[in-house]
Length: 252
Length: 258
Image (cartoon, each protein chain N blue to C red):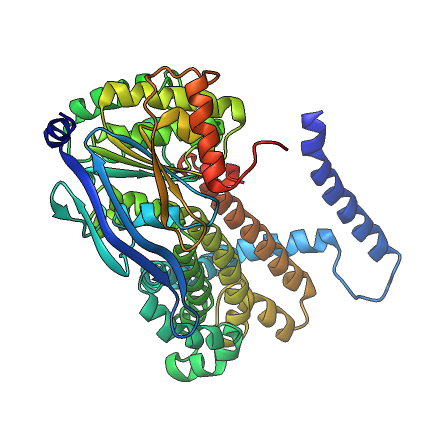
């Protein structure tokens, strides 16, 4: 029963690929490459050494932009949540910046950093920084006042209160926001590379189209983006289920 | 004679002329009005009043979490300036830390002790509240009654000399509530803490307290202080118990017929 349930999604993917292959063999006009052509496309990329190069380039930018954002946004957001005055002062600015898609910053990113790694890293940083900051800030606001009072009652100093009550209380929300932000970062890197880079999976897609309508390579790029995105998400989900965070799923 | 007895018992807590108003500008609500109270060392006091009357506010002031608008709270001859680990507040619910195990919660206030001493204390209080076998359990795996035991054990573990309990058994079913009262009395006799216990349950107050402080609706004033001089364990069908209970019913203005 369990094995069957596990096989079901794979069977569905297989069915879809089969339908794709059959549909295209009955439709002479080239609106989509066949799945087999996509596999050959990926192979071609691997042989040319571009597969590894582009995947590494994209992951490199995501890692830097995202890690930098997380490292700065978590303490910044927690600080704003902890100090009401900071929150009051900065919240309107955050709320105005938040609906501006990171992609809207592409022209400025190119102006400031030129075409290359830095522009993409900057865009990913922007896309991850704001949501993590806002979540961290709100997470502090949602800490039960009882829990803080218990901490004060037992004579905890401000630092101890932060370490022993604030951190554990906000951790589950932080981990969820880190997962969501990584998903967004992965979306943004592709878009950024289409315009502001000369390598990476986003560049691959645009380049394959411009250099002779190689749609097999375009779809190959899309498949790679999907698979890597899935892997990143699985990784982050594992983090959410670490034992010290498990309480958050059981609290009603 | 009576005077001599009075002088041998130290006053633990004294409230003088306590007033509390909430709000600002035109929207001002009087919550407490002119509260005077003396509590002796080792005494079990119930603050009894209807929901929302301000008795929890009073407890929060005594606990140091709120500052009164006027008046003074003095414990052991010193004015209260804030929360203090010598006096532990037990919250109505959700006071336990969901991210810590039973052991972790009970040991929460013991961060100044050595590892062995901490382990010894935790074991002692786990046993005192009857949670052996649940040391590694998380609060979400426990019943409401067990969570409340964890909170009481956590409070007792730091060996405070006062306990403030804010309707601690309010969220429990009536059978568990009776059990918890018996437990609390047993612990109180063993550890001899001064206890301030807020409740809106008349029966509960007469079962537990040395004295019941009957409070009015908002703004809360002290209506009367009832001495419950029945030895423990109390027979809750005895004449004396029923008389005291009924007299509180009458003071609050309730007929005891439904």
